[in-house]
Length: 84
Image 1 (tube, helix red, strand yellow):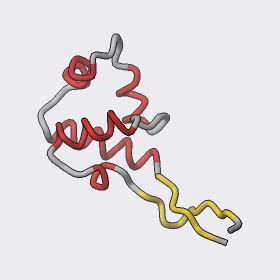
Image 2 (spheres, rainbow, N blue to C red; image 1 turned 45 degrees about the vertical axis):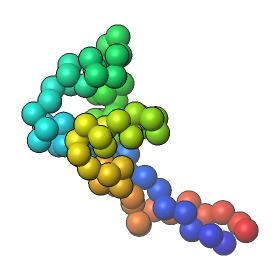
Image 3 (cartoon, rainbow, N blue to C red; image 1 turned 180 degrees about the horizontal axis):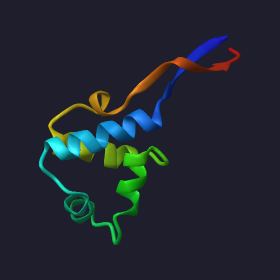
Image 4 (cartoon, one colour; image 1 turned 90 degrees about the vertical axis):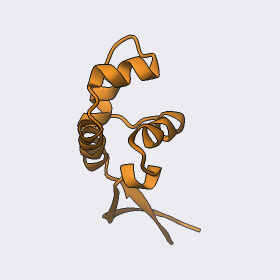
C-alpha cells in the first residue's frame, strides 16, 4: 500500500484568504485579475468548498509572491490508501 497525502481544503482556503488580505487585495481585485464574471469562485476557494485550478494556483502564487506549496495545506493525518 502507498499512502498519498490529502489536501486540507478548508485550511488551504483560509490560507488563500489570509494571503489575499496580507497582500492588501480584495476579493473584487482577484475577480478582476482572473477575469471572472462573479466572485463566487474566489469565495469557494476561501471557504474550502473548491480548489483553484493548477493555472489559477500558479497565478495566486505569483500574485502573493509565494510558492504553490506555501498556499496548499497538506493534511498529514488523513491519507488516501491505494494498492500498488
